[in-house]
Length: 442
Image 1 (cartoon, rainbow, N blue to C red):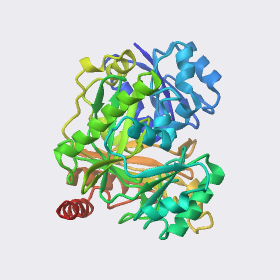
Image 2: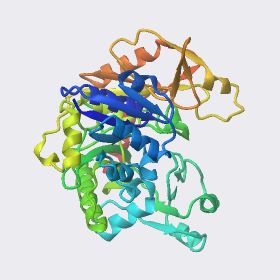
Image 3: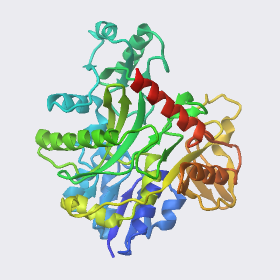
Image 4: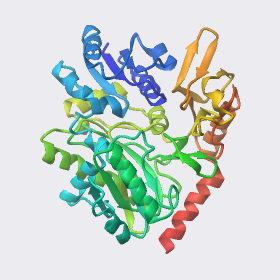
C-alpha cells in the first residue's frame, strides 16, 4: 500500500489523483495544495493546504506520512526546487529538479540546448537581455513571436497578427517584458497547426502519450485573449485528424534527443513529464516550447485512457526502468471543455465580473468526467473563483460522441458560467484539416 504525495490543486492534479487511486496497489494519497480542491481532498487520506514556498512544511508532511514518492503537478513548485528538497529528504519524485525544469522555466535555455546539440525543430530566434539589437533582428523576420524568458502562466507569449500588428508594437512589448524579466526571446512566427505531445521520461527512455490539441483562446472561433486553456481533444487512433503518422514520430524523436541533451548538458537524468508543444508547418514539425509537467487541460484527455497502472509508471520513472514497462492507452476519443466564470478573461470592470465568486449547481452530467479546478466547496454548495472552474471530459468511440457527452454535461451546470461550445466539433476540426491541407499544398 504505497503512500504517494501529490503536489498541486488544479483540474490536472484532480485527474492525476484519480489515476493514482485507480491503481490495483491500493495506494494512500497525501495531497499538498495551495488552495483546497474538493475533488482531490475527497480522494486523499490527508491533505496539507498551504503555500508551495513552504518547502519545510511539505517535506515534514511527506515524511510523517511515509510517502514512497511524489508526483509534482504544476510548474511553480518545480521552479521553487521542490524536487531537490524531496531528494534531500530521501523521497524521489516524478518531476525534474530545478535546473532541469529550466526546460519550461527558461525559454532561452531550451532554445539554446536544441541549437547546441543540433536537434531539429528550432525556428529562427535570438535572446536579448537589453533593448540593444532588438530592432535590427525584428526587421530580419517576416513575422514574430515575443516570449518573456520565465514563467507567465501560459499568458505572456504574444504573436504578431494576433496580439500586435507592427514591428514597432513588437519592440514596445519587448521593452515592457525586459522591465519585468531578465531576458526576452524573439522568434520567427510559424504557420501551421499545433499539437501537444506529453511524454513520460526516466531520463533514458521517453514514452509518448496520445497527442492532444489545446484551445488557448477564450471565445468561440479562437477569438479573444489567451487563457490557460479552454479545452482540448484527442482522437481514438492516437493521432489527430489533421496529422500524419510521421508528425507524432517527429515530436517524439525531438523529445528523445532533448532528454539526451539534458543529461549531456547537466549530468542529471530528466525524470518526469516532457510536454512538447509542437507546430506542423509546410516544412515539417517545429518546436514551440516545452513544459516540465502534464498539460492543463491535456492531462484530462490522456490520463482517463491510461490502461497501465499509474503507480507502476511512476515507479519506473524514479527507478529508471521505463524501458521494461509497456505503457498503454485505450483507443477512445476524448473532448475536454472548461467551465469558467462568465468574466474569465474579461476586464475587471466588466458587467459579468461578479460571476467570479458565484455559486454553481451541478446536476446530472451523465457519463462525463468532472475535474475540479478553481472552486471552493462551502456548506451550502460549490462556488467559483476568478479562474477556470471545472474541466468536463467526454470519452467515447468517436470525437462526435465524446463532444456531445461533454456538451450535454455542461448544460447540467447552472450559474453564471461560460465555455467554448465549439471545441471538439466537426466544424472546428474540419477547419484544422482544411488549414493543414492548404499549407501542405502550398
